Amino acid sequence: YELLAGTRSNARDKDRLLLESYTPHHFKLTSSPSNTYRRRDAVSDEATYHNMRHAMSAIRMDQEQQLDVMEVVSSLLHLSNITFLSHSQSDACTLDADNHHLPCALELLGVSLLHLQDALTTHSIQVGNELLIKSLSLERCTKALEALIKATYAALFEYLVTQINTCIKPPPNTTPVAFIGVLDIFGFESFQTNSFEQLCINYCNESLQQQFNRYVFQLEQADYEREGIEWSFIDFPDNQNVLDLIERKHVGILSLLDEQCMLPSCTDRSFANAMYNTCVVGNENGNQSFFLLFACRFYACTEFISFVCVFSFYQ
Image (cartoon, rainbow, N blue to C red; front, side, top):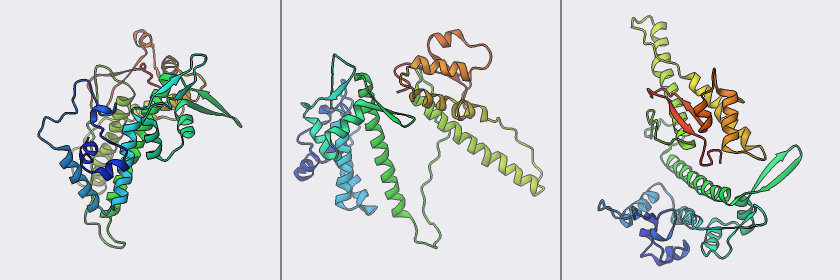
């Protein structure tokens, strides 16, 4: 939103970023039927864009580096608008070459049409010494495009964090005088419908909770005991069993998901059945199996959180 507003009056940047006279309404990534992109808090996206560019200069990013970053952001806007053509005689799809956003995305990303099409419309599987190439359905091509946008944005975020850290890093052999620390250990999510994203968020918080327990309770109490300090022992629950359920090699949820994705044909049901066969202890819950559900009880939650293996969970 800031990019579109901030370049509106800058013809040179707008031409380089291939934004012409676009507004948030023109891109799938920023538009919505309810016009929620329209600011109602009196904040100017154009003003915050210029503040952001000033901040980028403050961390010693020159104008060329800043425009490189903006090119990536602009490419994602154009990527969100590209479309696919499905061929009725097979499951294969191709990029719609008549979509006028496609050349913009290719130029901004610096990739060829062939390379982008292969990345979004096919899936390669290594079987021994042989590489198998499988065409993706229209639905899976769309999911691959969404994954590319998300992964590229995440990589851009990490790049900016690296730039900030490089800027504030003290000279060699000096004592650090500034750092940024962020810790959010109670951001567990539980919605009416929970899927892969909530599983990842809760897994991350569960890992942070274990680290918090270890450093605040376990190691501190070990220091007290070693130094002979009298204190009342604090008992705290161990959440290793939850982490094992999710991350244990070969039999954890994430390992089973990786294993299923390596198979030529994987569905939400086959992934759910693999979990039921490997992770369920005792009698399997028939209702869960019928609706492709599985449940985990996390550290900060009083009740089990159910996850739904539908809506292309494995994708």
